[in-house]
Length: 384
Ligand code: SAH
Ligand code: SF4
Image (tube, rainbow, N blue to C red; front, side, top):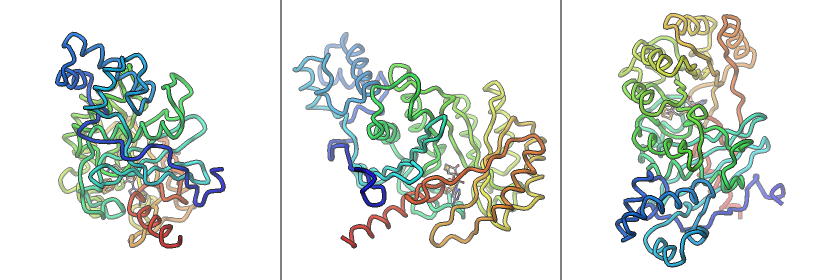
């Protein structure tokens, strides 16, 4: 059935209008859930146990309503229903690419929308999660950066993206092995380290072993280089770190990434060295977008190797050929240029695979999120 639908549009399975941010128990810590229960008059000595039960239903079983929570008495369920909510946001769009990539556009009660992308691979499935609506940074190659900042996502909204993906992939109860969603990357819209507290809270919920139980080694946070928060990230979250480096000298980097004015390359590399040191020499991923005639020369590749070696950082490089968007001022280098750039790094002992573009037909590739799908949606509406 799905294959016959236009544009890989999937029927929307999540119920509409059931999500209320102020009533939602999703995205709250154990202690906060217990506190909420106390507020509605649950006897204090029951609160912890009840919170535990609810937590298990939400994050292990994937319950979307209190009615599903069968080991909770009918009266208690009615009371919970009256005050709280465990439903999902409105799903505006659910798309499947010809390569299996999926994308969901969800709308929160204040009308703001975010996109979440699922990328199935042979040995894992990666969920690309957004941390903000829009972004305050204005990297010149990034579509998200051209949008007005709208706001930070709450912990509820960040966790919700994973729950929605799991709903669509039918991945409840939470399996311990062979998971479809086996990895999370904070590489969607927004700068996660500018929304530190909510991202941290959401990741701790995702890692909690009473629920989703995803190991910190399976979570990667990507940042444009907010140096002070990189230190905090190491101490308080301990997830894998990816750095959007994109250039090897301050002049070029400042031109394409204005945040480099505030936190130049030396400070950034020092923070990375420290990060790798705390977590038993875990490798840092350096993301490097390839922009034709801007940062794609042989010299750039060699300087990238030199930079990593000078700071003695255990690292791998992820090369991302530029994904164009309407109005962008850059071009993607030729395939042979990209291959040469990659070879130069590999041959000096640092892994530097080229990230294959996934989900291009549903506009799910890096740097293409949100505005594009709004346009596509308008087009679908007007042709009907
Ligand atoms: N704000 C964070 C998280 C977003 S991750 C960060 O910048 O790291 C998204 C990744 O896609 C970043 O590495 C970003 O630099 C890259 N990107 C942005 N626009 C792109 C484009 N047009 N083509 C390819 N990659 C792009
Ligand atoms: Fe923001 Fe990252 Fe895009 Fe830069 S690349 S504008 S930091 S989302």
